[in-house]
Amino acid sequence: MANLFLGLLNKYLNETDQALDISKINPTHFQQLFDLVKQSKISSTVAKQLVIESYKTGQPPLDIASQKKLLQISDTKQIETLVAKVLADNPKAVEDYKNNPNSLGFLIGQVMKASQGSANPKLAKQILLKLL
Image (cartoon, rainbow, N blue to C red; front, side, top):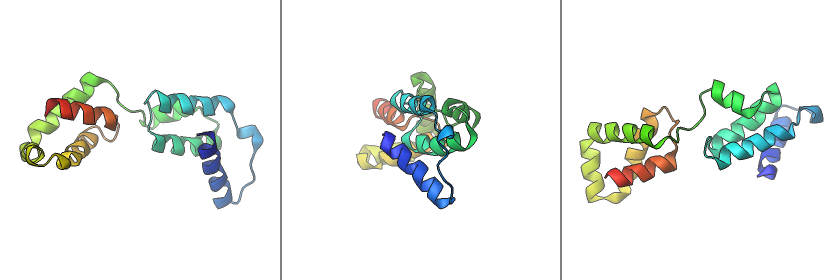
């Protein structure tokens, strides 16, 4: 994962025609990114975004994610509430799922939309499957 983050940073530096400023590399920030992904508090996509933002600003990734509302919702009860609303609002999609389980993606998308992209998608899928 460290190579992935360093690769992203290298790509950013090449695109902006900048040299690496080693003083901006904070090992604590990289560790925080690893921990946030491991704990499912952010997605790997968000982690990639935070690598660059943290390098540019010097801010810890958790602070940036909090400010920009990029932290994932992993509270089961909160996601269950979102899922229940999505199921109630989309009876045709529920019926479609019963006839074709491959249509689950639409319902997951609706949960993500309802959470403004902050629901943990794996957890949302698990809860959808449980409630369907």
